[in-house]
Length: 310
Image (spheres, rainbow, N blue to C red):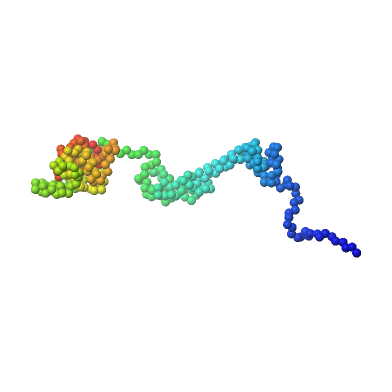
């Protein structure tokens, strides 16, 4: 008796190791829309300018000779420009965090607060024409009295002639009335006391060792505190009586470590001058020291007093 056998059937409920494809192959990808290409590409590219679909070789605008080339890039630039204008116009109000390029800081140098934002409003000062945060909005808080209004012309100071006249008057007052307080006290009048004081000055004085002893003039040198600053306020030095006052000034400024810019400036505001206490006058740069001073005298360095005016 013959037995019949049938092929085993696979139940639809059992798992399968493959995927049944019921669609056409072309449904997976797309064909290139460039003329005469029509290549099937499983990962096609989309042109954002003309909205066409293309293969790898023709994906660029120049590759498929796009009829609307550059339209997508122009739209991106326009959108970016509008976003920048919104953020720069109002800081945080434009949706972005304010920066040094897009925001405005408080005009107080020590303050870094961004103003004219949602978190911090700006207050304009009517006196100095600047904008401040709430903390520095008052005139006392941002030292308004010391600031010049923006756009205002700077105030003109006194002229050089006025400065020279004021300096001359001040020097005359020194020589007549205030020698005891501003300048050194007068030297003893007796000959014996003067000799003792001069010998003490010779023992403590410093100077150029090349100057012969018979040509040395021993002087007290001071730097006037209200017009110039020095490391050493006073000192005792000797100079040659044949030296000019200008050379003595250079040596005295070096000895007291006073800044000397006479050869680098043209105006009188920064120039040093030599004032003789005993004669009560400014010494000329060209005159010799032996003709203006003797040993035991006192000279004072002053700055910004102007030329010697008669």
